Amino acid sequence: MYELIYPTVDLFVYDLRDGLGQSDQKVEINRRKFWQKIDPTRTDLQTSKENPEKDFVKLHSQRFPEPYLDGMYLALQIGDTYFLQIDASDRTTKDEPTKDNPPRSLDQLAKLKQLVINKLNHHEKADQIDPDNLGTLGQTWLVWGQATAGNKTQDDLAKIAEACFPHLLPNRKKWKSNFTETDTKIGELAGAKVFEYTHTPKNWNADLTEFSQENYHLVIMLFPADSPPLSDIKIRMQQVSFDLVKLFAYRHKILWSYWNSRRLKAELKKDAQQMEDLRQQIQAYQNRSFDLNQLQQRLTESLPMLAEYSTKLNQMSSQEHTIDINLKNYQKRLAKIIKDQSTTPVSLTPFQEFVTIAEERYQQQIQMDHEGLSSVLTILENLTRTIDTLVNIERTKVESQQNTTIAIAGLGLAASGSVAGIVATQVRQTKDADSSDRISVGWGLAYSSVIPLLVAIILGVYWYQNHRKSNK
Image 1 (cartoon, rainbow, N blue to C red):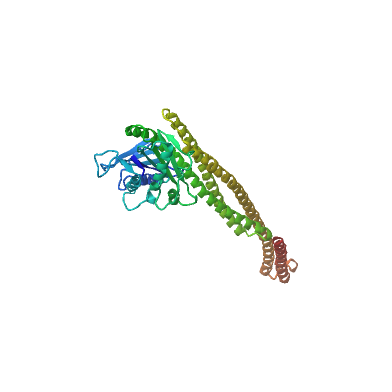
Image 2 (cartoon, rainbow, N blue to C red):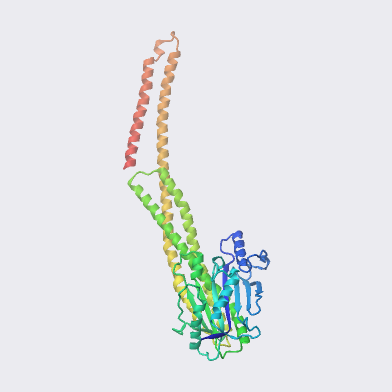
């Protein structure tokens, strides 16, 4: 049966403070939700301490009141990210309050983990983090402690890490670790052996709650029995903790951005299918006459579709850019950790493997998706221009027909009006007028009947010819 001295469970929770394009109201909601994780009744959000221009700001620290427990809340602002650490270390026991740092069974890890969950949820009714308290960017569990006498080698510590794993899994999960199967993924930092377990979502189109629950990150750091005194181990962990906090922040931003890109891709594919349906509808017009109202309706539909598609495509490009920046920061932080650990052996193989995954899987996938989906934008732009051209052509044809009809009808009305005027004049002439200057009423009526008839014939012929053309 394995035991650990000073077993410690830390939860790192990362929340987005100020996202790209978010309104002041949304930023305020982000702030309030973050502070409620520390105290749900808190009204003082200490906004004066925040500084978006600084890379790091300490916002709040608060120790737990339990005398047998070393634990605290620590809140930081790291650029555009909120960070909350909930720390729980079992330095003594309730039964033996005067005996510091007794060896504890690995069962204590599960108890400490539950205590951390309770501190985050602010109740004891759940065995996992409430959905509202999950980090919007993600969370990492960091577990560390010192092995008891006789456990010094890497194999010994790997077996202990394997035994710790079941006590740290989310309930009802059947994930498996491989800490003892290979030593290629075992790192070394600050004198401890480092074991990392990562579970990424299978369904990248899931909502944020499901994504956060499936995006599980666990790091176990075990110090051998012959390592320096516990007081030195605590100092070493304090020295490396902040670098790990920032390293994991970059990691979670990369995964969060990739998750966003998958959801955008799904939406863009649906939009692309709507565009294809619209293209087929326009193509079908080639076999029949155009309806101006329908064309105008299609144009009305395509313009906002074009704007929305373009916006989502830009958002996908933004996610790619976010991954690129955070991957570079991740690599720089790895280099800094290695440089700072000049007095102890250091190997960050578990963390360096993530660089390869991010480059070859996440970055390349977004780049390929963006290139493929960008071609659809060109098709939509061409389709919109085509519809606009067809609308103008049909509008011109309709206006031309209307003008021609009005002109012919006007000619007929003018002619009829002339004849009517002649007849009216004849009717008003006196009997004494010269008969040679008079137009008979019969001729006047004949003129007034023949000219409208000719106009009707011309209009009929014009309509027939245009009707035949439109049906060809």
